[in-house]
Image (cartoon, rainbow, N blue to C red; front, top):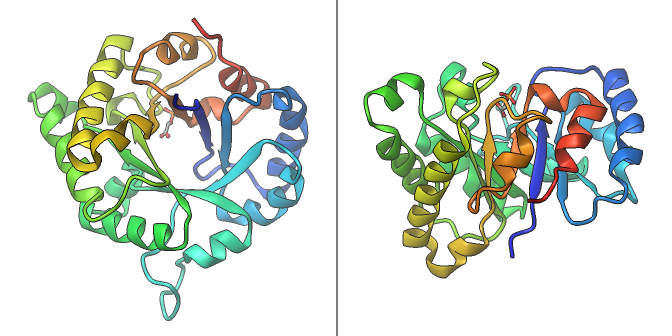
Length: 248
Ligand code: PGA
């Protein structure tokens, strides 16, 4: 059985003070949600303080990015050991916004995953097609390429996949449950080719306009094991409702 995995992705939102306010309000909402893995990915600047607030809770921290070198002259970059030092259990790698605005290729994604795993950071690897790729019938080609190249020479341990169709991110336009299940099933088949039966243990999250209103339907899909949530994760009550989704 795959334990459901629900992660907030705050992107470039919340100061330290705002992060603390969120966490103080959020912890009581989810203190009994022990059958879900709960993760928050705040900006780097809030990791240190949030780490002190989540001690003795069931909440884990993720970073939104990491670099593929261990240390040195890389102005502005952050290493895996720095993330571990401030309490991160996971790191998001290859988010479509990083691929789009910061030119991250599958090769860069792969290098980042390799170093993160060497330090035993869990990895949430994001993949997903654009609207034009979907309309051109290339969705599965894109997903296959991102999975195969992103996971080259990597074992399944500590890997979580987030399927995030770019056209659904921040647009209020969620994939239908049929579209999500179809993509997740395809991704799991690709994982099976790479990891063999271990593919059954890999959590595949859906991301893209997840809300308290659509989470229950999405989680009812057999291959949807969780969610990566942007906009709806910024408010404690709304993210708590997503974490406490209703099982069908
Ligand atoms: P959204 O973002 O929930 O605001 O669509 C999801 C994501 O990009 O991870």
